Amino acid sequence: MLIRPKEGILDPQGKAVERALPALGFEGVSHVRVGRLVELETENAEELDSLCAKLLANPLIEDFEVEHVEPAETS
Amino acid sequence: MTTFGVLQFPGSCDDRDAVSACERVGEARFVWHEDRDLGGIDAVVVPGGFSYGDYLRVGAIARFAPAMESVVEFARDGGPVLGICNGFQVLCEAGLLPGALLTNEGLHFVCRQVEIVAEPNLKGARHSLGFLDGIEGGERLSIPVKHTTGRFYASDDELDRLEESGQIAFRYAAGHNPNGSARDIAGVTNEAGNVLGLMPHPEHAVDPLTGSEDGLRLLASVAAVPA
Image (cartoon, rainbow over all chains, first blue to last red):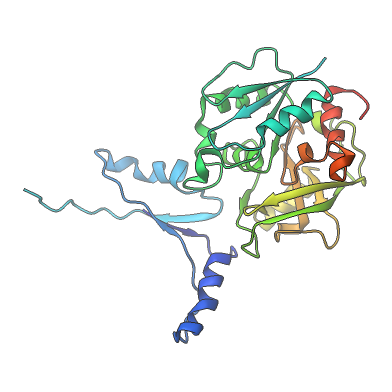
């Protein structure tokens, strides 16, 4: 699940990162937005959207995307 | 005599101050987060702190505590509820209050005395406002803030609606907005007016020794005693 601040909402954390980059020589970077990534395993993939909307993200201030990844074979 | 119930989550840190403040105007007891029993409690305070370590998002996990289920019912029945700082964040996450609280515009933790002004149409058409009963529109209170996540946010349409319905309780006085809150909002109520959320800490403004007794006014309102 990728969760990020909604478009149009000021993200001071992103701004702080953006301001720090030129000091390290990284020029031309703009519109930095910092969100979070939640990884989980589930047997009920159909519930992921509602799980995200109810707990992992606050839809009032955040957008989210769900990405399905099949686990790699380990044995 | 009014009995206050002060919630305690793992990570709450202003719970003891809240109980001491409430005891100046009534009786008070703690309500542990796993406890659903609000028996004998006339008013609920959801205190400040870092419930559940602020994990995931401030207030997001506390909202699911068994005690909060009882608080939601208590609020629906018209019981007075005050959420202070982290408590305000919890009440927003629980859907008892509109909007959300975001990281301060300046990213820094702010800790200072601020002045807040009660909204002129505070009472509107409502009869009982619990913690706001003794406050007059236009009154100026001096109360400290201390937070990193206190920037009140709601969409412009929602802000217009809140202004019209009289749900904005307090705004920071000119020049006192410490966090970039939309329209200088420091506190809001639910539609009925019995649930109040505030970023400033009234429980830290109850003694002249620490600069102001104005916070006591809110607690005295609900206890119906003169502050």
